[in-house]
Length: 114
Length: 129
Image (cartoon, rainbow over all chains, first blue to last red; front, side, top):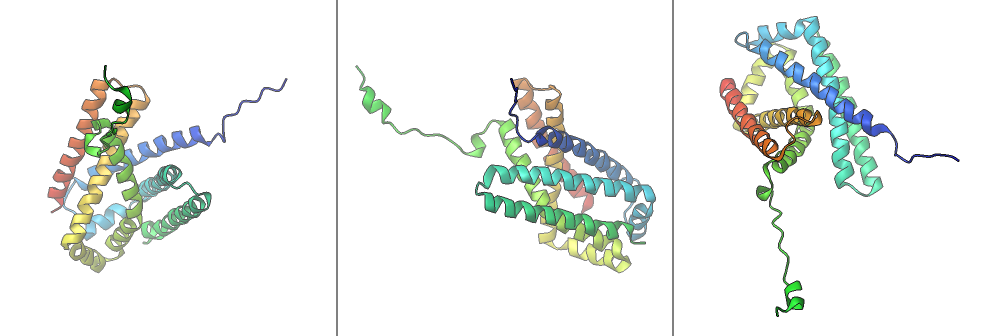
C-alpha cells in the first residue's frame, strides 16, 4: 500500500521561518542604527563616516537583503489573497521580483561607492 | 405566534467598518497596509540613501528636498508605517511562541502597538525636525 500524504508544495514552513528570521535581522539593524545615530549630530561628514565603516556596510547590506526576502514573501501573500486570475497574478509577481532584484543591484554601488 | 417567514426576510446588516473591528483586527489590517506601503516606498528610500551618500552637495540638496512639506509628510507616513510594522511584527513573534494569546492580553498588546508606534512616530518626527 502506498501511503501518500498530500500536503502541498512544502515552501510554506520555509517561507514562514524566513519571514521571522529576516524580521529579527531587520529589528537588530534598526536598534543598531538608532544607537549609531543617537551618538551625535548628523551632518554629511558623520553620515559618510558611519557608512564608510566595513561593518556598517555589511550590516546595511544584510538588512537590505533581509528586506528584499521579507518584502517578497509579504507581497506574494498579498497578491495570492487579492489577485485571483493566474495570468495577472503571475505578471504582478514577476514585476515584484524584478523590482526587488533591481533594488538589490542598485543598493550595492550605493553602499560600496568610496 | 410570530410570523417566522416575515422574520427571516428581515435584512441582515453587517457592520464591516474597520473601526468596528476588535483592536487586534485593526492592528492586523494596518500591518498589511503598512507592509505594502513600505514595499512601494523601497525605491524612494534607496533614492534618498543614494542622494545622502553621493556627495557633500547631494547631502545639502537632500536637506532642501526633505524640507518640502509634501516630502516631510510622506516621510512621516513612511516612518509610521515602519514603526507600526515593526511593533506589530514583534507582537506577532511573541504570539508565535504562544505568549500573549489570551483574549484580554491580546487586546491590550494590540492597543499598545497602536499607541507605541504613533508616539514613537511623533517622538522621532519631532527629533528630526
